Image (cartoon, rainbow, N blue to C red; front, top):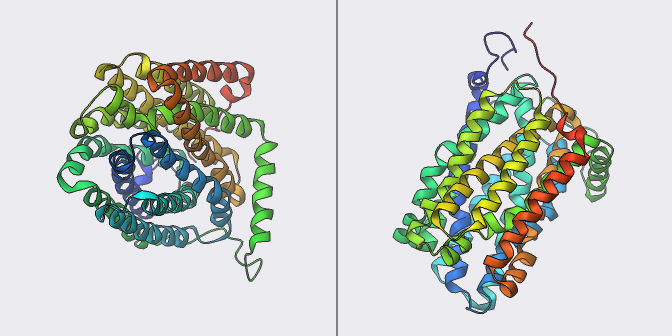
Length: 428
């Protein structure tokens, strides 16, 4: 690992690290193809589900993902603190390839009805569980590879790399589905996991911290002890606790309508054709890309709590714009703000946690941090049920106003979150 000095300090300094370049490349390719999986699943269910329950079944995709993330999330963080993080990433990616092939086969043979949807949702649950192990492990390994000095810049570059190709990929999603069908498009997404396996396999990284030698085996009781320790650590740290609460609130109210049911809103309310849906959704990625560039330029910025708050406000206000009117322009402008707000919020909160949390508990805290996505996906089902009753055009504007009010309330009543800083690292 290169030393932190005047020559390497900067937003691009992590790129001098060979292992980080491989980690970054695998992550970027996977992120580029992830929307293809998500949108293909939604449109496949919309196409094959009965008309009277299609919205509920679409919502159950996110519910399955949320249950998977909730079931495996804390366990994944404990594993990341206990075992070799590089090997753990490899195992998870291999299992993701197998699960992706299975879902593509299900789509190819058009297995519908109760058996088909049951298998589909179980596989979705499994892939989300694997992702909830991958995410905290991948975040926890960055400071291992780069050191604490370059970790903020590395986190920002992760977001930049993940967003560079995503606008084009999202724009092409509808065209890919139209050309290759649901199964072909979904199978194509397996390339992301395969590339990640190759890149991680080429890393020469060796772990600097592990608990593997403490006991010859790692059982369920050990996992519970590790998870309980992580929860207690987060609960007694005010900044971490309220940052997690803020993200859970924002994502629980905002994510179901704008992301989980966003393609449904665009195709059914805004009435955009499937072949053009990628053109609308790609603006989320454009907003994320812009914010990621800004975050990379602000790699040494100290006031990360302020950026978390600004990101949450931008996301919630953009939610209002997204559902204010049923036009493509509103969807485009809203998506830009949603992507920028979410990236600003996630990158800044991740950097702040990496700074505040010691290495030996980092994986567990990151897994708790990642639970905001699990709650967001679980909230999709009640949102869909209310939407089935009230209709989406009635429900979504109400949710957007609730999100704005909740964010403002938390930021006003918990000023320690806004004032949270990371220490400035000076060159020797």
